[in-house]
Length: 253
Image (cartoon, rainbow, N blue to C red; front, top):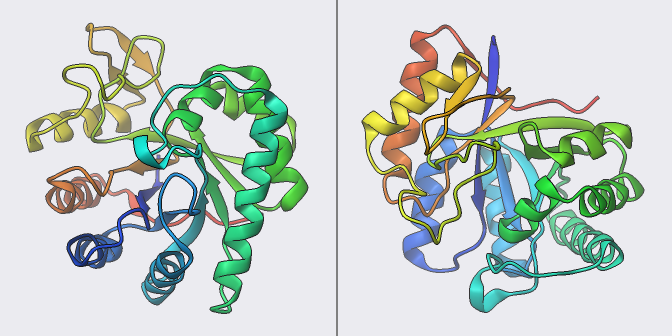
């Protein structure tokens, strides 16, 4: 590994506290995934976050999710592939229109929450997401959980897939994330983050039950709602610099 992207999910909380947090995080990342107004966010917040990202030369991405604002798009649900394709397509079009009002464009798509997890393991949902992205713009980059079904579907559809890993989340032995509802799903100390980062740089993570899971990382995520997000990103940047790894946003082909 010589280069890696640092990304964070943004545009989800419209309060002075969270806008200040975005302003702190934006100089530390290279890609921002901005909520499309369904699980969270609104057009004004999309514009503000996208403009801030542009000012810092951070890649702008759409962050579609399930329409469960009350549960922040994190509630598991059964849905058809057709519904998923329509849901993603609608959010991409809306997001494109909003950022275009600021004369901005976006370069990538990363799913949110329960939709992200569902597409990672369900081939039919992964195919539906890939179809939606390809139909909208085949040059968009598709962020996907490393090693997941969405990686396969995206590549089959001809998309450039960015395999994503997480610095602040625990893994299960099948390579999926430990659900937030379970204990120890979030990494909370700098030592935990440092250890997981060093494993990722060596091509694996250790699952919550002690198994070594092989993994490939094109992008590393730190969530904005992780309490120590700023400190973790500063630590990660120091570790990457020490390892001689360049931090850069992925480029469209």
